[in-house]
Length: 636
Ligand SMILES: [Zn+2]
Image 1: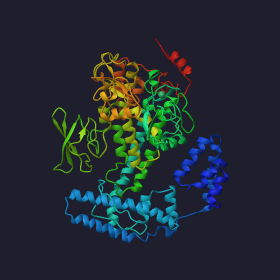
Image 2: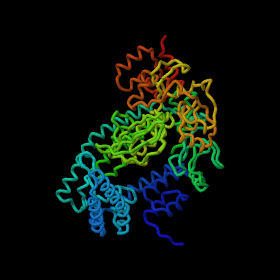
Image 3: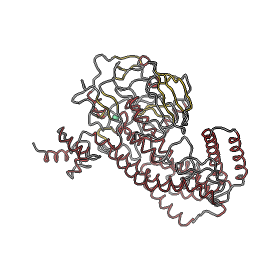
């Protein structure tokens, strides 16, 4: 059968292994499919990968020079349906204004209408441009440059713009495109957001660089120390989630066994069989720390990457930290491009939101309130200052009011039962509070998802989820000692790494093994799935345990002698056992004095590379060599 091809495809096929030709022929090669092509190439033909990549890079340089393709003036003409669409939008806004709502409610409805309008146009415009043969539309659709929303602003219109505080200017709709040129009032309205974004960009690049440094520091002791820790714990992932290709199954599912590698064909097969999610091994649930230091991870829990399993001795946390830091500073530049035009009211992106998840400031912007105790929603009523109050009646009869910011929607209805830690509105739950209510394990899973979502809302998508998992283990890993009895050599109120406690923890003598359905409100004594020791089980957790084949858990009526406490990213290194590592943080003088007072030690053979750097040995060296140096340097 005859089929159509393009010169580009013929050239591509010339430099690619024959086995990939069917894929190249059958697909439109946009950013997504090119990604799939390279992933497939790396997985199935690793020996040809290097050559193909360098051949294609050269081909790219040559073609770009010879082709000389460009954007024509005609590419910038607005589509024929533009006036008609704006007529409809203006009519809709007039309809909302005629309803004589309160100012807040009216603004909400107009913002919703504007966002829907922009979103619909985004979807339609690129396809329309491609049909008309516009190069610019093709570039956007291929994912090579520019987003649909930037394309819309260029040839259609920015529609809505923000003021200098980031709120949408609802009484000012812009109906001309950048290509047509804005009118003077439109231009001036656009400058508020644009100027604010431009200043914020300058400041944010520095901030992003600093956050990147903090990330690498916090993950510094997360190191691959062994091949297999032998755990059958893991985290639940959706079978559609391609980020987990190369991980290993923590629990057998269908015909696949524990430790089978997750492959595309396995996921596709499970999907056709109606399996929705599976449990895979992850650094979050790795137990290598039982044989090593608290930051230790095994190769199988880390999973395969492009280059195979990470080598023993590799600094997993530093790699993940750098992976997140690089697009962060790049992304802050991106925010300038979308600056000035309004974003959806309920998606929170940008540096401020990323940073606050890591450094949990006291005033957490757009924080979603959480129920502090189990209870029932008694009432949701509007607050006189705007926003709402959600009133929770606790099981003990007391009531508690939670204020919800006007930007956030309340979805929960009176009469709904809530458990401690449940989210009461739209917005971003404070990870430190989630950790406090739901424990280290659940806190890590929430944190990894929340940070990934915030990255995506900041146009920093496409980072593999597993990097967020690694970072979440590095950051959410501290507990506060409340009752040191039976926990070893700790004073009350000290902050300790959870994994060093878990390693030595034995279930208390009056703990008991019960069916999962009878464990509500009890505290875990032995970790199960990703839930850690001391997690107070909620009905949601119980359902999740049962769903993944856990029928019995070992629990206790009281919390263990410690409670989870998330530390700010900035402070994570300070809680490391090694005093020299702790100096790699803030308040150096105070930390040094404390180290002297407590007789703290430091080891170049330990998990931290800092003492090795201080002695100019150790980083990346073989461990025997390090041990010899350590001996030579030790003095009694
Ligand atoms: Zn492991």
